[in-house]
Each structure stands twice: as structure tokens, then as C-alpha cells.
Image 1 (cartoon, helix red, strand yellow):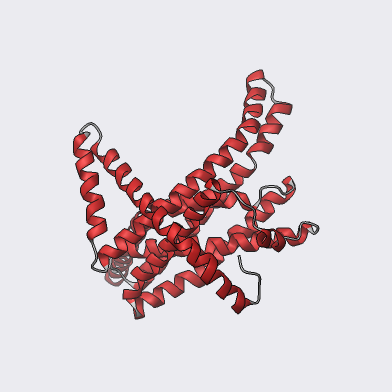
Image 2: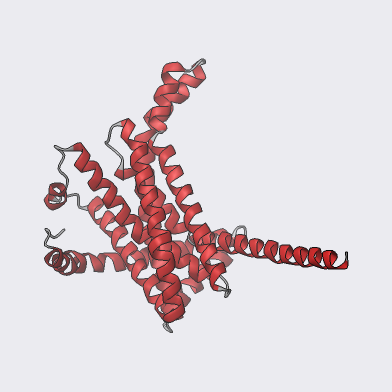
Length: 321
């Protein structure tokens, strides 16, 4: 009997350790996920454009393909790669974050540039064979997964940097949880957004009450404005997150001047508005980070389009754009 009691006591102790580990993983995942929120917003805002213009019955299958590609990006490539990098060359994490941040600044600034100076891109248009819908769908899905890889790399790297020092298995499990949950949240939201007009049409046609039918018509009419709003939010998120990553990276690498100046300005403005210092301080910081993102991104546009783009095209044997 004493042996059985000792065994049960050992089992109970193991269960307590396991429960504590689950709590630690959940807490770390929540913290890591919140740190990556800005990139998540951008991911959710960017993704709907890839299925816009396709037949309604192809929208959800396309989103499912992109979501599967996103999970594959995070779990099969980024998770082991980042853990290996942290184990072997941990000092490379910050430069990697900054490289991703610079890319986000470039993407956001390019959207601003196109908005201010609209122009077509013949090379991009030639990439999509609109005469073959199946080929066009494959191209769109492939493009979405490539874009997702960049954003997923940022999400996973930010998440890894946010996890407190712990064991390898806890970091791996936490990153896996963050990756899967964020993918589900992003593409679940995307699915809801792209099907909202169909939901509205259904309500407008079959609603049992006048209010229900009016709600359906409202959803349909609101979709263009919602997509435009999401595009704007995505652009702002790119610039804010990209600029924030760069300022933090410079601080970590020993050049804190820009980071310190932004926070000094934010603190001064927040003190001037004592009714909501936290909100005001965050808004000022985000705005200044975003402005920095615009400046960096605008400087990167000629570098990317005139140097890196043609170089990559020469290596891959494709048209530069």
C-alpha cells in the first residue's frame, strides 16, 4: 500500500509540474501574441485582396489554401529555423527583425506612393493570365503565401523575442500555439470579411423582417468602404510596426537616440493631457514610429525597384517589378 501511495504522490507531483508548464506556455503565448498584434492587423487587412474578384464559390477554398500555406510557413520552416538561429546565433534575431521591419516600411510606403501618384504596372499585370481562371487562382494563392511568409516571419520572430528565457521545448510549444492561433484568427476574420457581402445578399433576399432585410442591404453597400478601410488600416499598421521594430532594434544594437527622442516627445505630450496619458502617449509613439516608417520606406522604394528588383529578376530569370 505504501508503494502505491508513493506512486500516486509522484503522479500528483508530475501532474502539478505539467499543469504549471501548461500555464506558463499559455501565459507566454498570450504575451507573445499580443506583441505581434500590429503585424496580425496588417496580415488580416492585406489578405482579403487576394480573393477579391473571384467567384463566390472559390473564395473560401482559396482562403483555406492560403491558411494551410501560412501554417506550413510557420510550423515547418520558421519555427525550427528561428529556434536553430537563436540557439546558434542569437545576436542575429534583432537584425532579422529589423530587416523585416524595413520590408514592412517599404510595403507601406509603396502603398502611400501609389495612392498619391496612381499608376499601372504592366509587368505585374502580365504576371496574371486572366484568360485562365485556374492559373490566376494559383498565382494569387502563391502570391498570398509568399506575402504571408514575410508577415509570419515577423510574427514568429516578435513572438520568440517576447518569450521569457525558458527551455527549448517550451519555446517551441509556445511558438507553435501562437502560430496556429494567429493563423486561425487572421484567416477566420478574412473568411468572414470576404463572405460578408454574400451574407448581406442572403439577408436582403430572405430576411423575415424589414430590419433584417435592411441589415442585409447595409452589409452589401458597406463592403467597398470596409475593404477600403481595411486597406488603409493595413498600410498604417505596416508603417507603425515597421518603424517601431526599427527604433527598438537600433536601441538594442546600441544606437538609442531615435528611440529615446520618440519616447521623450510621447511622455511630454502625455503629461500635457493628464486625462488619458496612456492613450495619448501610445498614439504619439505610434504616429512618430509611423512617420519614421514612411521616411525609411520612401528611401527604400528606389533601392528596391531600381537595384534589388532587377537583380532578383536577373537571378530568377523573370521580369523585374
